[in-house]
Amino acid sequence: MGYTFYICEIKSSYKMIVNGIPLNKRATLFKPCNSTIPTLDITINPDPPIPGKTSTFTFKGNLADTAVTGSFLKVIFVNPKTLDDVNDPNARYVQNLCIITPCPTGYIDINEDVQIPKVGMPADIIVGVTDAIETKILACAVSAPIGPGAPSPSLKFLKDKTFSK
Image 1 (cartoon, rainbow, N blue to C red):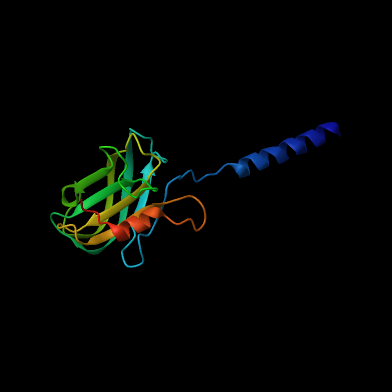
Image 2: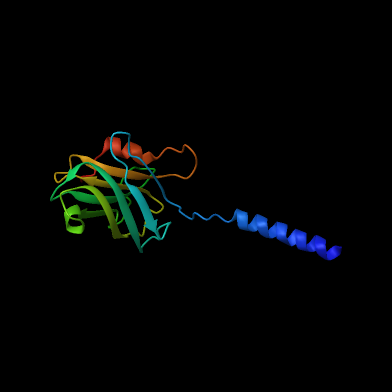
């Protein structure tokens, strides 16, 4: 009788432990920049990104207009308190989109290695595709603070500034 109780207790404890382990370890969640710009689906590996190391970003999604030669893919690391780029040479990753994917295109599915800043992390991450003269955002996403309904300060950044610098 005593053994039956222990076995049931062990099975019950095991079940609670297994059910408590999160299967989705994604730490960086991305939100739309706004309702008028298509949202990119972004994943990062490793996630969360490690300061000073390289992470592989996957960028997928439709673009508002066709990206043509000279369009840019950008990843910007923003201090959520000051809304400025983090103080690091790797605060902005900028790549000519048409070098890494055939243009013209209205959809992207790209894997790119991005150097993560050594300082200023954790930071909000803004990802976007712009036209060749950097006046129009064709698609974007912004990392979201953890927690339901938590506003991202970087959404204000997008209203006050542009992807160009």
